[in-house]
Length: 353
Image 1 (cartoon, rainbow, N blue to C red):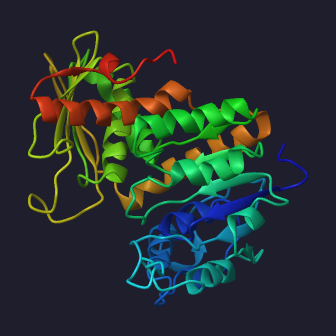
Image 2: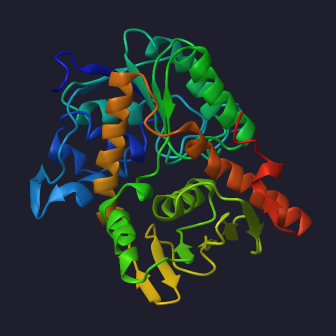
């Protein structure tokens, strides 16, 4: 049974992901979602991928009951500052993007001027991030705002830029008797699940190949989580073999399975958000259907359902070690690239702490 009183949600950063996840949490003006403006040039992408066939006024997705978007905040640096110290936003300028986001959702969430204002009379928080240049560098301080008040928080990927930041976010959640989560839709979409179920066709798959979308941390996290979704966690060691630390990573599992993660930049492929996976055994190979924007919606809904469960139970739906491992893999890859050797995860992270 859905809760009788909807969870009042606060959203930080009114970017593409705020729309992408927001439509699963709150009723929206569907035709308005499909429009493009100077302050919200990407929201029409969510409409394009979520609309029902060619029906402009209907979405094919199913909302997750129990949420209402109550407040939003968007006064955040995204591309640094100009010479006068004013924040440079990726899309438009404040307050246009926040106001336009509010107009799309029928509940008309309140546009807040400060983070402190955002924390009053809310039950949960979502930190959206598809556009900041810091690649999660502000996630610790943003999450702290809510966790220190005991507010359960969903942190968009990447969970953090560094392992120290990620561990501190988890520590804050535990210390304040609340829960925090971060999850990639690549681990939870239909295509990933179907691909994993097909492993029976080739027996014990020993090698996994995942082609990602780019070398940005936010995209590399997806590549790692795609591997986690089908091969599991508990990576033992990492070897960086590319031109950059995250360009090409070899993951070694304790049972001798291996995963090769390739995160090409634009020099290799025309940019695309589609991910591809193949698995190999001594009996053959299987290939996953491409996973991109048109396929992401099934994973998005499952992630929102996990968030809903966390709010209801007070327990993290994803084990904290599973959330921390991708950041540890990235740090191990950086060390491997610097020193030109395979690096054990234990060199950068103690899984028990």
